Image (cartoon, rainbow, N blue to C red; front, top):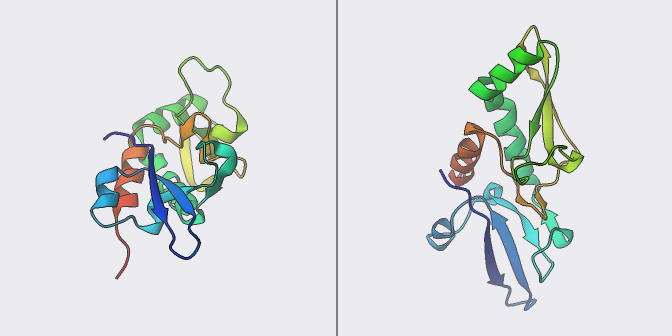
Length: 160
């Protein structure tokens, strides 16, 4: 499944202000009837689209961490890394960095799990408060199958 960095604009009649949102969902979903709140990563207030004017959506952040917490322990890549570590911490890094980056900055570490005896401790997940959903490298990108799960769950309409 692909990754989309999509900007949408909507004018408010009362304020005559243009706001743009970023989502992991494709434009077709927006045009076909809007986006669920949790699918909106945040709002851009910077007219140039830079991360300095980005306001994160707490509902998206909650979904992001829910996907990591629930699904990373079953990810084959995460399991293999936990076996390699043996005991310690398994960091879940944002995959948006360009290839060849040697050091992962704090804003690109999504969170971490404790690892005991080569196994991920699901209840040992801690979100990184310094993680940035949107940086000059783009929107958050989860590793492996987690990105596909995030996109699928973001598309789910939870209205009843």
